[in-house]
Amino acid sequence: DAKTTQPPSMDCAEGRAANLPCNHSTISGNEYVYWYRQIHSQGPQYIIHGLKNNETNEMASLIITEDRKSSTLILPHATLRDTAVYYCIARGATDSWGKLQFGAGTQVVVTP
Amino acid sequence: NAGVTQTPKFRVLKTGQSMTLLCAQDMNHEYMYWYRQDPGMGLRLIHYSVGEGTTAKGEVPDGYNVSRLKKQNFLLGLESAAPSQTSVYFCASSIWGGSYEQYFGPGTRLTVT
Image (tube, rainbow over all chains, first blue to last red):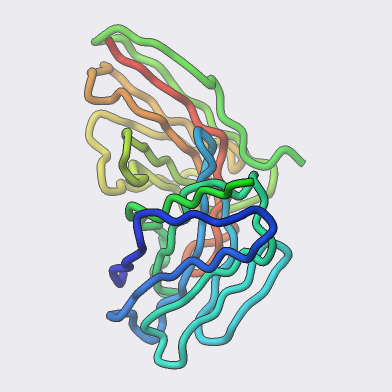
């Protein structure tokens, strides 16, 4: 799996959009970009994933650059409950046993 | 639909004692996983299963055993607990492997003294 790089922390004001960057310059053509988050003391929660195209669901949007070397997770209207560690993970579709390689992630703090 | 549940939520063991952690999922998922998370670190895969009756080793399998006798349950056993196994244990499941997302349980916090 490709290595991903994320900033260690970022703050966001409640109600504003939170833009979380992730670099994955060595990503291969069959590797998806996944985002999970972990709220303190809870199990990780799946947010979204994508391969090439931008994706949106009820939680977030994922913007992947055309060269696929980086991506941005967007939380459109951050709330206090979005305070969590956010993990960006690159994983191949052919990784049949599905191991997730969690790095250090980005600690996001949403402030009132 | 409870998703992924884990029992117990907390446990304290003495060195050398044994215990079993239970993970149950009601989503009819084929794949199940056990991870551990140490303070300030990411999750590491202990064992996984790609279907009923199958198990395989992950990154850090030593000191643990697993069984998947029923599709919905995945058990993690510690035969002789050691202080190094103090950790938070998370179970997860997914429909299949590959690109399918994993759903995690709430975790079991284990302390070995």
